[in-house]
Length: 162
Image (cartoon, rainbow, N blue to C red; front, side, top):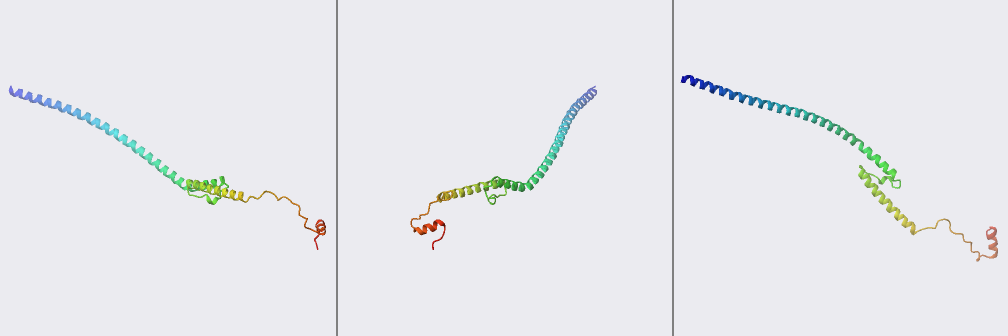
């Protein structure tokens, strides 16, 4: 009977061990399912990020193409701006307006205006110093008092004295 009791104890112990192993297996299965779900979420996030990166790379390529086009048309735009600036300022010599960028052109416009204004001021000052009255001088009758009567007669009829 003790043998039977020992065997029963062994069987109960084995059943208890099997139950423990079943619980451990269930726990491991849940953990695996949780990890599989986490891996699936991470894989989906990775695919989404790859898609975003592809979209960003395409956007970057488009931006580079646009910058290249802008870079090619920039000199033409600056040249057109220079021409408009010259036309808008007819009092400035076109040779004084120069530059390879809009800022350089604006700076040269500022300098050209300053030079032209200075020259105008100096010319006005000089003109004021040597001011000549407008129009013809007043007519003053000739002084005929020094002429003889004969010379006066000849002058009056337009002849020359001999």
